[in-house]
Image (cartoon, rainbow, N blue to C red; front, side):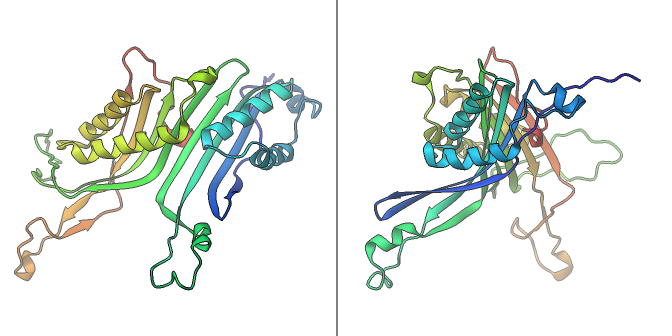
Length: 307
């Protein structure tokens, strides 16, 4: 049976690069996990094994490290843009580059007063600790004409210990869940947001500031929404981002409901006044939705793991 080649790409995945910028005695860290995927005129390598149009994946790896030195890493987005532009414009057979980046955050360790007489002031500016579970993400796609930048985060665990209810839902003969008028609302945020930037260097967002502001508005919306459902909270989080950040047209969230159930303490003669909970890890409700700026079309994949 005759066959034809469909969509394809190749590259080097998960190139871990740590860039130290030395500003005198003060050091700054960028810790990235960079995956490169290239596509274009690659039929012959599949049909006949000819590598005439193939840039080795080892070369893409080397480019990541060389660019960390040559261009520095101002932000994950900017670094990805440099890489995508390079691969598409320097190799004629390559028509499209997709760069996916995870960024791991570090915060500076400050010397305690007790140790300050043993450690010089300059010496404490190069010690860091990895912060939290949150991982910053970005994907840059370039085809020689159009850019698409989608950034986001995963593994951001948040909780409201009150100001959440869940009642008035559909009930049938299999429903056992009791209505809740004061419950814990907790989730592990996986979110992506698409920028409306195309190729105007003068209008390029300030990527670092944008991430910080998106994260801030996301958390503020989570904290300030009196929630009657996780869906309502999700919508408020996405709406607040779009309403406050003009550079973003689309936000997609995947929010697992990290259920906390009140423990029955009556067998022990104790009253549980919304104080002691059992944290269940599975099964869990999974709430997902896309929030769009009015007039825009959705482009972020429904399955965020494929981004």
